[in-house]
Structure formats: C-alpha cells, structure tokens
Image 1 (tube, rainbow, N blue to C red):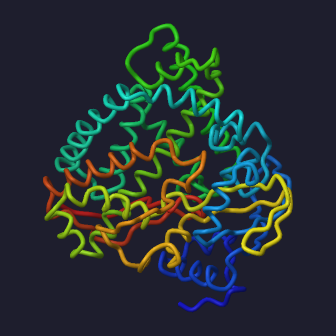
Image 2: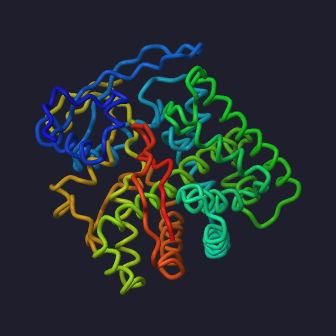
Length: 417
C-alpha cells in the first residue's frame, strides 16, 4: 500500500486495526517524509468521568530522535504521564504506571529500592520457576488445549511466573489476567463491552489489582518469605521504603507490562517463525548458539510496547523541529525498530541479527525496562521447550489483533500440534 502522508492519522483507532504490513508502510512514509509529525490527541467517548481536552502530540518515528529523547530525561519528562496520550489527573498517572511515570529524584529512589529487591538470589529463584512453569503449561496444552496459543500457552505461562514471584495465590490468577487485559485494552470491545464506561472499567480493574497487592504486602511485612513481595516491602535504602501505594502501583505495572509484553512477544514469535520456516529451521539446528540473537530479533520484530510519551520541560530543538516546553512527544519504538538508518535490512527477520540495538525494551536511559533480562529468559525457555516437545507446532489461522495503539497485542492465535 502506498500512503499519502496526510492520510496517516496515528490517533485514529481504525489505523491500528489495519494489517501490520500497512501500518509498517505508513511509518516508513513518516520516517521518510515527516519524521516528527503532529497529531491531535484522541478523544475518549462514552465515559461519565470527564477527561479534559488536552493538546496533541508530536510523533517521533526515527531511531535517532527516539534515542535522543530517551537519553535526555531532564528535558523529556516522564512524570506528566508516560503511558497516556491525554493529560490525566496525577493520581491516575501514578496509580497505573507508577515508576514509569516518574522523574528524578523520585524515579531514582523507586528504582534503587526495587533493584535491591531483585537481587541475584531472588532472580535465580524466579529463573528456576520459569523452567517448571514452561513444562507444566506445555503438558497442559498437549493434554487439553483449546487450539488458541495465547489462551493455552502464552497467557498462563507469563501470568503464573509473575503472580508466583509476587506471592499472588492461584485463586486470584483469573482476576489478575482479566484486570490486566482491561487496563491495556485501549477500549477493545472484547475486554470492555460496548455500553460500558471505559474509564470507569479501567479504574475498577486497577483498584482490584491494588487491593490484592495491598493485602499481600501487609501480610508479607509481618510474615516474610522468599518472594519478590517480601523483598519489596522489606527493602530499605537510606531509611526509605516503598509505601503501600507505591507497592500496589508497582504490582499493577509489573502485571501489565511484564505480562502483556512477553505474552505478545511469544504470540508474534509463533507467527513470524511460521512465516519464515528457514529461520525456524536455522534456529532449531543451533538453538543455544542463536538463542540470544533470535530472542532479541523476536522482540525487535514484535515491538510489544508501541510507544511511550514524554513531555518537554524546556524549549528544545530536535532534528530541526522547534519544540516548546509543555509539548508532548510519543516515542514510537515500533517505527524506530524498522529504521534503515539503524538496522541493515530492517524488514528482514533474521534470527542471527547482530548488532541489534533495538528499542523493544525501551530506549537507553533511566527508563530502560527493569525486567528485560527476565523477559528474554521467559521467551527463550518457552521456545526451546516448544521446539523440543512439539516440533510440529504451527499456526492454523490469522491472529486476532488487539485494537490498540499502545500494545501490539495478539488476543487469539489458532494453532495445532
């Protein structure tokens, strides 16, 4: 498809329902002709909760501009709302995105505390559980799978790892999954049915997750065990600890970001490996040798998180564009990951790609994904086990895609062994 540049509207939900190939062609046109393009913010309809109109945003579509914005957090702020195109009340911003939507010194404090909790012993324990959960999920899928790769494999696998590392009881897994889907739905009617107030639905989902975590956090203060929640509530840096609200916000962040992004990457992996059987065969023939590069190529290819927002603290000139204090920019990671200035043959899927400095976990800077190592490990272990135990695993139909500009999600993916 050949796009006229003025026909591209990144705030139009219909654009995000288009096939992946058409969207990639639109971003290629933007990188070529209008790499810093202005769009009006989308309008939320059908909600009794008023979201004030807000100024539009500039879309950064080139690799070098996304990198520049990420490396200058003193200019490109996250605090006003990293995950929302609209300007939301401060309480909502902190409620749903926590550490992602903070700037220094608060961000540095939160990251120090959380990083201390993710110590080598804790991470080692989590990594051991990854092997066990992958084995159990595949066994269950082989025994009674529904034929939906997301429901049978990707979703339960990642959800159980995150919930178990946070000490969430198994009885709450369905609730945690439902709430995460609602929060990241972008209004997709499969998760927020027509006639439902979309803002209220998201607020209620967040409140439900926060309540689960606050109860667990309080209990772990008095009865610590060897899990992440115990480490978080008891971690102390220079007499500072996480508040109950910060713990709850971190749980919402971990569940949504860690669950949805890795689940999305696994879905895309199955699709792209089916589309490129020669790359699949190449990886199977030397799995350990290519595991690192192949996993990163899957994340680059999928770009599970499509964008993050920044807000300018001062006037700034970016690639000749005069931006003003208060302007919003969206860092389109998916577009940066296909930029031919940064990648050789970016539209080619190559399990051996090296170098591969993609932005699938965010760009370099203080907000680079804290769970990148865990996500890579989850993807590697699951695909290794699938290759060994189900070598004939294939997709049997088109993926059902999430209608979202924020998450490049796959809701359902038919498959067979």
